[in-house]
Image (cartoon, rainbow over all chains, first blue to last red; front, top):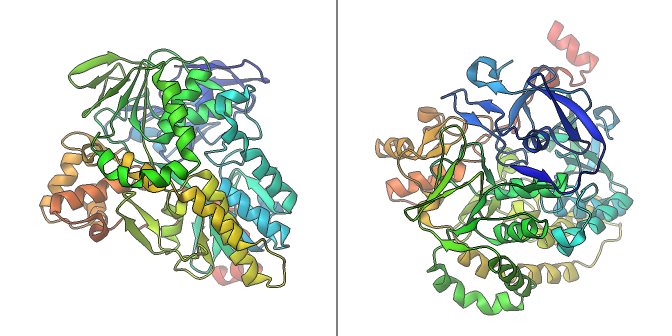
Length: 97
Length: 465
């Protein structure tokens, strides 16, 4: 869905649902997911429908993910860090984790 | 990077938001010797218009344009002014006594401010079409953020839809960056010209006219532009096609945009009076000429004061800062307000024309049927209309019945739609219907963050006894 204009910048390794993903210093978690072709972050608590990042500026809350064990973080506001464990969320069950 | 433990308990001025208004305000206040802190939620300053201005990986200046680079001067000015600039700082509360609740890296603090300038800017107007919640559908502003901050360019089949200056600017930026756009679906009604035309002379005198024409030509030369009256994102688990005018276009990414509106959440939660702007179709704070709000000591500057664009936002920030300086330190030297007001007036000149020309069609603001209005709680337009028919008079009652506006976005992506739907259904005006009643915390905050608030010994004893 997205490609990098310039593949510069320091490489940062994180995992998404246990799978290694390579991204760049300066990425937010949402940007790293989209650059890696992950277009859904969670399913909704109401209907279980898939959602991906929408606004990328912290207002829509569609990009909620679990980061290092803390649930419902806004992926578009959190900068990536080496070794970060990102998990996509599913609906009501994990929403309050 | 500034930590919560670096913060003082009191500042003369707290500026909330690090876009052009916030940066200019912090620069003026810092220079005049006010103890000033600027809180910004994002990893870096610049707001949305100058997003990632200090860190963008986009080296070719031509891609984002010279207007974007102008943000560097503002950042430099704010940094040399002496204000403390805290990024990754989420303000979750502001009360009428100017107590500011803020969290940095999971640590919360309550800061007392002598004056507050709310510079929380704008957000994109909701664009509720069928399928707008599917992965693969994003706001144009979101795609622009990815381009500015991470140098990410849409890849695959990209369709853009809507209208307004930002949509066309982003299209040009994507093309300059080597991206491809299958089509631009223009949702702005042609009859908008009738109401825009009387304002054309003013627009032609504004700085936007020449830029706008050049931008449109640049994009139209390379992308088919199709005027559409209906629009739908189609897909099961993600976007597959965009449907319009009885046609279907395969797409991997649909970028939506129909203008920006003030981000009112923090100011409203602080008790600032707002009014309906019938031309810009949004709520905006009631302000005096110095951008002071109805709450003493709280000003609202920038696009949060009513949409006027980034350059105007900076001038508004300066005016609000001068008012704060005069109130707190009358002896401090301040810049000539008359000159700033003249510059602001010039920036605001073309706005009426742009507003009328880019006035979103009723059908794209007041959807029908199964179209989701509240993305968080998945409440549809048909449900909101039906409940309005049953006698529900306003958004707060609608919340109680339908939960719309009660999800994590706190109404940011449905508030205007719900207000307009109720007004449409009940044959009244948005001004009459009003908006959601907003309360702090305006951003979610964890119990652990609350628990991290420093507690004085006296307070601890009071609770323990």
